[in-house]
Amino acid sequence: MSSTAGPPSSEKTYTASDGKIFQDRKAYKKYEFELSYAYRNKTGETSYRKPPGSLNGQPFEISDLTDCTAEILDFCDQVQVDNCKGSKLFIGPCCESIFVRDCSDCNFTIACKQLRTRDCKNCKFNLYSMTEPIIETSTGIEFHPFNGAYPDLGKNFEKACLDPKINLYQRVYDFNDPNKMKQNYTVTRPYSGQEQWEVKIEGLSLPKNPCLFTQLNIPEPDWIAERYKAPASTELELVVGSVVDARYKGKKKWYGGRVTNINPDDTYNIAYDDGGKEDNVRKEFIRSVGYNLVPLPEVVPPYPEDMTAPVEVCCIVESRYKEGLYEIG
Image (cartoon, rainbow, N blue to C red; front, side, top):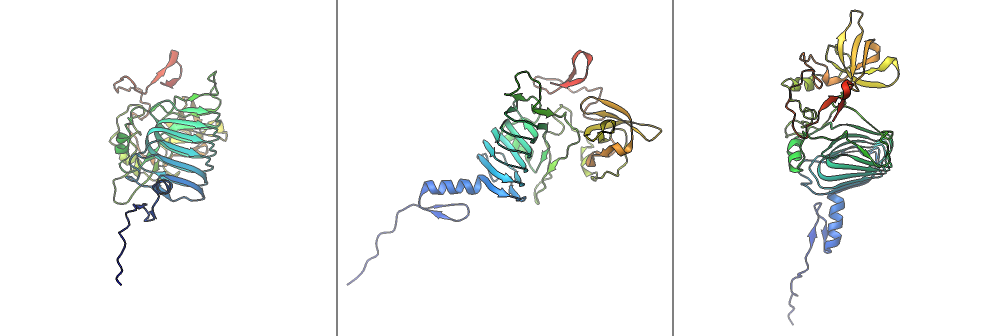
């Protein structure tokens, strides 16, 4: 009596990127999305990274993080961030909207077509946004210029169809502020000395922020590389043009600015980034801002008085309304 093998199975299988095999396509897709395109339910994890080339324009979801650090270093589609606390998130160029909801005490570095927040508290956004950011039922929100850098970030901006020269991070629309009192958020002017989030990856090019010298349409100076080489230290000598933080009138809060004069009595005159000025500030009320402290040219970005860059439609500029303080527009 002879036995014959049955016909080979024709049932299709699906293999996830970690090697797990599925017979059900729906289950496979759900598993693969959570594996490759989501980051959730973590506490105290600080090493999560999606490197360049890992998303290639796919959507991504982040939720339920506490005291975590995550770096999404690729161009992507829509991103949703929900219920995060005390975390730091770097999200590379997004060709659509990034939604941030129910987050508190978080620090974001984000580049996107549009940012929308809802029910957020005490969050800081270092932001590139090609359109007006929108906040809703959110309080204590800070907006700063984009401060991110990683290898080929400029190429990711191109793939996401984002123009680094057009950053509207400061044109915030608050759904819960019909009288435009700006009570729920603050905006800092470009180059207030905030720390750059630079990510170096072995074997790839050096990190570069394509927005750093375009947010006010200023050509990148030849000496920018030297500024990045300067060590981060509060002991470096202050010179005219040094970018600093100072305690206005000796109070507790620090404000970004730059040194405009060194006085014979070893005090300093400071021009603050919000347009204010203060003379004869003592050294103990000033702290240097690491990489910015190198000798600068006589005309110091970002606010040279003889600005001659061509003005075009959509340029981000400053003008003095009725000869008052400079305002961004």
